[in-house]
Image (tube, rainbow, N blue to C red; front, top):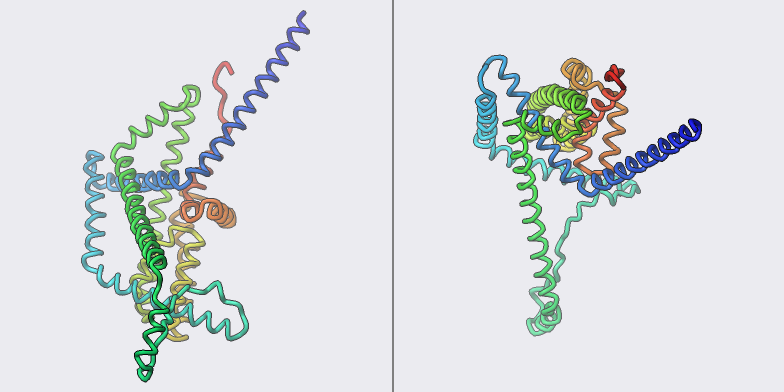
Length: 376
């Protein structure tokens, strides 16, 4: 009797294990499909959370010198950031716009020159085509009689259908431009609103996530959330310091060399530092292209400056500032960047490091040896 009961219990345990495994597999597959479909929205929300964490980190730093209510410190931080942005756009807005326009023209002309050089040496450079459209309208000579030109002009007049099709294409492109601009501005305000809302009441969202989790794992969930928040705070502060240093060093260095558009080049170098490895390569490529018009000495000086900035970032700032924030091997980070970039595009490439930081915190916590609860 006991043997049959034991076998029955074993079959029930096996059936239960198979059912749980099947449910977990289906849930994981559903999670992957959901992430794939709504990846852009999820990354947008994650960007808002990162902004909120950054504001909280700056508010906590201000607490060391200005104790008081959290809301007052957050308001002061927001006003300070808004004043800095307003000052930059007020004092240097026209300069930034002029330098950006000049830089865009310089880079386009250098790409065209590079394409011509490669094609003259028998190298296919069609991937560098800028799709510039040149209108080659037929011209009538002044010596041509008007009577002979008139039938040709009448013959070349587009039909009503062609005019309607061209007008529809213009309207379609205009609508795409308007919708793209509205979408970008809308995404900016969504991230801004989420960041401010999260930074204003962080405890509300923290307690909400803990309360929504199953009762048996609420303590573990609380620990993981606190660790993720602390890791992201330290990393964001370190990243902002690194970006500021890269911006100042690049700007002053290019200014000394005499590269046109030094300020806007420094800004883009500092902003692209947020994206590890890939951002530095892209910023360096833009600076080299912008320095070609200034001669070989400027190119060599800019290249030396880039090597110095890279060494400063990789061997001084990152090891010292981010030593306690995120310790991820460069090859692992680069591989994860490429994976997320291929799967999710620009969002995945830009947010690969904070996503990997969150994953690392969870994996490290799951691998820790913790005492089992009494009675288990």
